[in-house]
Image (cartoon, rainbow, N blue to C red; front, top):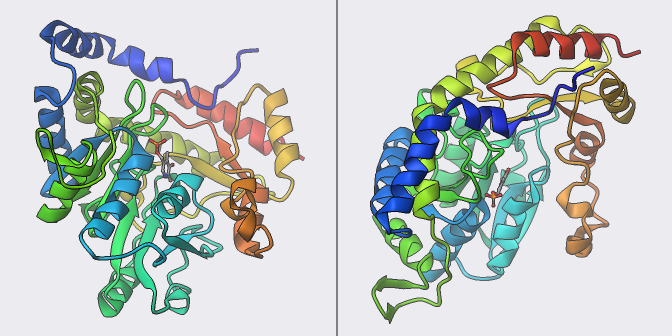
Length: 369
Ligand SMILES: *Cc1c(COP(=O)(O)O)cnc(C)c1O
């Protein structure tokens, strides 16, 4: 019996193999490996794609988020000790970016239906120290709402988007990553726009933010050997930029192929024990980074699917506030977040998953008793 893998990166790379090899060879042969023409080209193309004035290539998605908050600290928009509102059920990187800067994450429960930050709970979490709201387009679905934009405007809060899982996702025709004051993007290999290693970007319309992030990512220097900030080294290398520029050209088509897989799941899965993700208001906006179903007997479902040759993953088994690294919050009770972490299961999802494979997943899910 052949296994249906959760995600096979090799298949994704193989389909663009010639283009990718040519891009890599071009950089190898050029003799120029950092901060060159490949970076400039990818940044220009990615900014145009997202719909922002600037895109700044950085080393990874976590750094992108760290640098955005750090830039606001350096420019006096916030200070260590200030609070950032963030969904409690996010991947831990969103939270690390906040605590890394000496800022305080204020964990807000998600909406039990959409699993995105519950915009009805945000105002209640605002204090005199709140400076920003970080929304996370988890699983490749838009977390932004009119109400979130309105709350940020009314309370003078900065809106930052964690767009790590949502490259290509839309909100009313605009791309996520262009909806707030700045956004962090990850090109980790398993993301919808994946590099062949670590990579990330910051997008923003704010000229000052762009300048400060660019120098912070380069040791705090805008001019060679002149240091304005105590920065770090977080650069996107030329090989990854060249590969990403190839893959960006195919991103919309790849996301469309993911949508077709999702449609097979929506049409076929009828098991009453398995709750499917709600269909987005605008189905064309969802990019299905992860197809997250929920099941009260999740672990049994996962074992059943494995026995039928279907590999699944859990995103994520332990919420951030229950992690050892954040032991100060271990006593917090966030029941909706905790139930998601107890019941979530991610079905195979990839632009390379065939209709036949998706149907086999459907059959296996429907056979679960
Ligand atoms: C992947 C991810 C990140 C971090 O990106 P890296 O490139 O792995 O550093 C941040 N936030 C979310 C929600 C992610 O899924």
